[in-house]
Length: 341
Image (cartoon, rainbow, N blue to C red; front, side, top):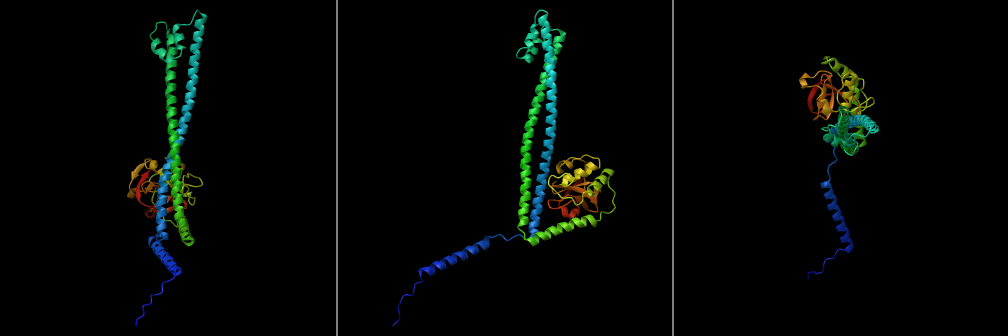
């Protein structure tokens, strides 16, 4: 006779353990499927290079805002000095009118025209009083000078107020651009920190080798510069080899890309502007085949500028973590055009 005994049921404890184990296995499998693979060194470098390019663009806009701020501060200072001088001149003219009124009083009474002038609205008064026969030629000339000075003063004060508003907007923009630069550089650093110590060391060693080889073994050929200014600028930049890239740097201890080119041409006796966006207009645009030593060379949608050094080499301040060095144009990025100063 067949046995009909019921199969033994698993204990509650065993069921709980099995269930937890299965859940954990499913979770681990899901995490493994969803986890993004860790980027390798070459991928990190490409992303970091892109962030440095974006930081370069933001740095140039920051530098432009900084230059605008300096210009506005000078213009406002000059205007305020001018307003103060105009106010002194107006006060002197008013004193003259007052003296004239005193003399008239001593001689038998103040002229009605002068009384009106000394009232609440002399500017409005002159429009009415200029036709009065009572005004002498001397009085009329004095009142006209006062009116003209008042109008000039009002215009200058309005101009100063407008520039002060522009300055406040520029300072706000400056803060935003600085924050953007810092954000890009911080993001790049996080990516670099995601590499192993060995990988970071390899990248650092590659930068060091690039800088050393550029200073000692670069072949610039023997092509002549397009002008004495280009030759002098290139020679000046070469004295800065090995100095670090620092965002916003204009020398003498550190540089960003446009800070180096501006420094070089200033030493050569030619004043050029501060940013890549403005340096592109400081000379004549030329193509790659026309480049000669000393010409400015622009890359990556105006994110970068350097000095053409000859034989396909560029002398530039590359990016954070690097130093002023020679580098092949083929490794810098997308060439846009050259500019001959």
